[in-house]
Amino acid sequence: MRPWQLDHSTDAPFGNGEQIAVDDLRVLREQFVDFMLGYKFAIDEVTTKINILREDFNNTHEYNPIEHVGSRLKSPESVLEKVRRKNYAMNLAAIRENVLDIAGVRVVCSFISDIGAIRDMLAGREDITVLEERDYITHRKPNGYQSLHLIVSIPVSRSDRTERIPVEIQIRTIAMDFWASLEHKIYYKYRGEVPPNLRADLAQAAEVATQLDEKMEGLHRQVDRGAHTRKS
Ligand code: GTP
Ligand code: MG
Image (tube, rainbow, N blue to C red):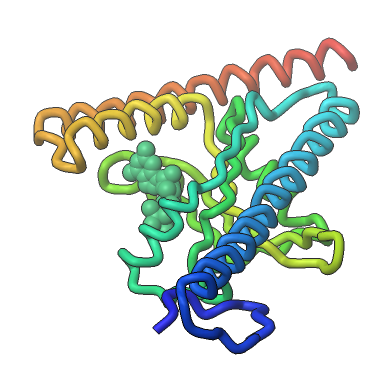
């Protein structure tokens, strides 16, 4: 059986012999590269949209809610590993439908209130459809992880067609991001088996991060009020 069922295969009959198998593999490889390229373009599209929002918001409100925008494209190896691990069908249509984090964009903002503002600005755009939302801020993960996750889909114009591509957008504060990157390193160092004392310390650090976020939000409000009072 062929390991991959092709998405838009011409279904040309395959002959016998090694040469045909090599051709078959070449076609599969080209299709996979083309498939992955769609996700790279989707990252470019989302990043551009976020940068436009940032500049526009800055211009209108004289305030920039976004500290940093990052992105990552899942490697082909990780995509295939996830398909195997989750037992998804090994074809491009099934991967598009099930693996929703091939394209990832992370928006790091200054204050907790910015998270909702950025979410609303993105979700309010006509060309962005929110497929899924996970609020790990209201419902923090047991280990302490906090972030707002959106799975969106956006249209990507290719040379010969338009595709809707899913993108995972993570929105979090600097403190939440700081915590998550350290936790990620610890998790990998211990291969997922984080010792109980470290787990407790991480949970406590998440609590401190929340307190810092709340304190900063309060300060930000005070400064904002002061600015408005001075203007009037
Ligand atoms: P995956 O199969 O890993 O993609 O998880 P999922 O589909 O259940 O989604 P989930 O929302 O739990 O996680 C998506 C992504 O959020 C992960 O790939 C990480 O980037 C991030 N994330 C989720 N949980 C944690 C966590 O506990 N620690 C850190 N550092 N990152 C996390
Ligand atoms: Mg993931």
